[in-house]
Amino acid sequence: MSKQNLVEIIAAKAGLSKADATRALDAALEGIESGLKKEGKVTLVGFGTFKVTKRAARTGRNPLTGGTLNIPARNAVSFKAGSKLKDSVN
Image (cartoon, rainbow, N blue to C red; front, side, top):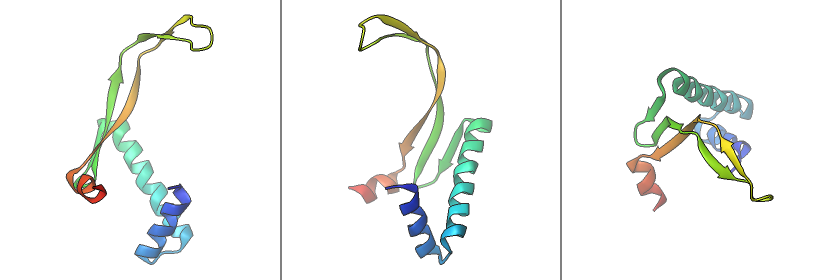
C-alpha cells in the first residue's frame, strides 16, 4: 500500500478531503518521528510500538569484490506489532 492509498482510506473513513487527510497523516508521522527523537519510543496501544535501537559497529563484506568493510554504529528504528494488529492480520 502506498501513502496515497492510505490517504484515500483516511479521507473516506474520516470524511475529510484528500488534502486534509494528507496533512493529518503527515502530522501523525511527524509526531511519531518527534517522539522517537525525544523519548526513543512511541507506543500506540493496540497497534504497536516504535522503538529506537542501537546497532553496534560491525564488519561486513562487499558482495561485488568480496572485500571486508567496516559498518559504523548507528541508531535504527524497530517496530513491534500490538496484539490487536496481530489478531486482525491473522
